[in-house]
Length: 189
Image (cartoon, rainbow, N blue to C red):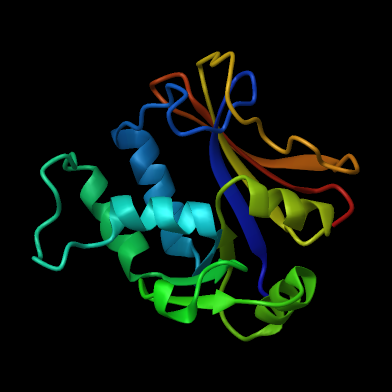
């Protein structure tokens, strides 16, 4: 069965909003590039899909935008090329054309089917979809890059989770910036 991994940047106080002061640097971009590269496919909800597409889709004109730092380009290339599945009840099939396929119907059934297909790991991103998948017990691994920032506001990690999820630490990596990458698996696995 293909494992489903969830990865996200988070502040010390649990904020997961990308504008909460979590500035990417070369080291964290290398980390996330490797994480995306390990995935056979990405699973996003509508909001995350549209946000990621607007930032990381290769422009039709060819060159990457001027705002990208040199260390952003490998990440952009990997995420642009990776297969994506989009969970949405509001998008049409024509709205997901960034190497993507729309998933409809029962979330648990759709994700279980994806996990049972042949292939490598799946990676989920965002906030709302991972919450639903955690509630369903479908996430096999969690990767958090915890940044030395206290945001004080914004959406927080797993706000509204129905049941506590016990995790065991399986890997830890410290960055020069003071951020720490932590990888966990469910303790019952």
